[in-house]
Length: 450
Image 1 (cartoon, rainbow, N blue to C red):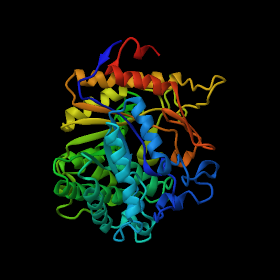
Image 2: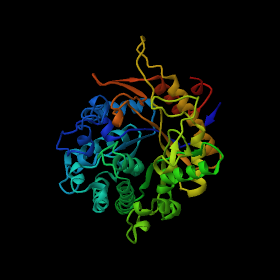
Image 3: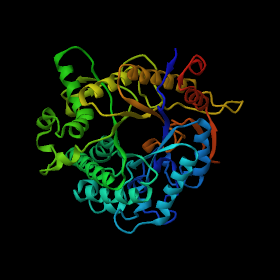
Image 4: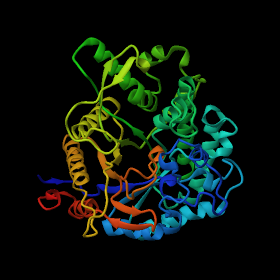
C-alpha cells in the first residue's frame, strides 16, 4: 500500500538525556533524582544505571552522523536540567549548556531540525531535597531554567517541548514509587501533576518572551480507552480511566479546567489550585506532542485502584514490554484529540516497540517485527492526515537502544543496536526501512515491502 506524506512532513527520532547521555557526574553536572534512584537496591533490573548509558555525551557527533545517514528531518532530544543548573536554580554550568549548544550546531549542520524537550523526568536532586515537584515554587524554578536554555539556544532552536509525559512523572514517580523519586502517595501525585502543568504554563510564557517565532508544545502519553464489555459499569470504568490518563491533562491545557467528573471522583485528593493557575496552564500552544504505544482495555472492579481493572486482551501480537500491538488505536486517538481539543498541529513525538534484538551470524539485526510495527503506525498517521487531522511529523522511539528506566538495559527500542560493552552502534533492518520511508516521503511498494 502506498502512503505519500505531505511536503515538509518531519520524519524524526527521539531520545532523552538520562537514557543516552551518560557522563552522569562529569563537567560539573549536578545529581538528578534518577542518579539517586538507580542506586536504591532492587529498583532497576540487574542493578543497571544510566551512569554511562550510550555515552552520547562524548559520542554525539557520531550519533548525529547516524541521524544524517538515516535522512532524519528532525531529532527530538531532552536537556538535562542538572547538567545546566547543577543545583536546579542559580549557579549556571557553562560546560553543560555548551554541550547542548554544540549538539544543536551539529544537527543544523546536518540539516536536522532540533526538537528540544526541557524536562524528561530528571529533576535536580538538590530541588528534590527542597520538596521537588510537591513544592509550588518548583514551577517557577522550572520557568527560570527554561529561560536559561532559551537565552543560549533560542537563536537556533524553533521547536520547544516543555514536558515529556507529566502523567508518568506524577504517578510513576509520586503515586506508585516505580520511578524517581520513588514516592507512594496518590494525593501527592495529583498535586505534582498540577505543579508540572503549572510549570509548563510559566515556561510557555518565558519562551514566548525570549524566542520570537518559537513553536511551543508539550508531549503527553495518551491512549484510547476501551471498555471490556458493553455493560454500563465497564463503560463508566472506561470513562474514569480516560479521565485519569487523558482528560486530566488535555482538559486543563486546552480548556483551562480539570474534568468535573474527575474532580468529584478524587474528592479530597484533588490538588490545591490557586486563582489564576488554570489561566497559566492553558496558555496558547502551537502544537501537541502525542506519545502512543498501545491502547488500554478496562473493566469495572471495585477492588482495583480507582475501581478500574486493566484487561489483557487474549491473542494478537505483543511487544517485549507486554504491550498489545494495536495500530488502529493511533488513528482513533488522533481523531479524538483533533475532534475534542483542536490543537493547531500534532506531532507523534514517540512511537515504537521493544523486541529482543540481537545480531545474527551475518552481523545484521533482523528486527522484522519492529518494521511491521512502524509500517502499520505510519499508515495510521497517513490515514489521519487524509481525513484532515494536522499531523505534521512522526518520531520513532528510539534512535538508539538505551537505558529503559526500571527495566535497565533489558529492553531495546532503538533503530540502532548498541553494544553497551563497546558502545558500537549497529543499524538494525528497521533503520534501513525507516531511511527508505524518509527518502521516499512515505510508504511505497519498495519501502513498505520489508
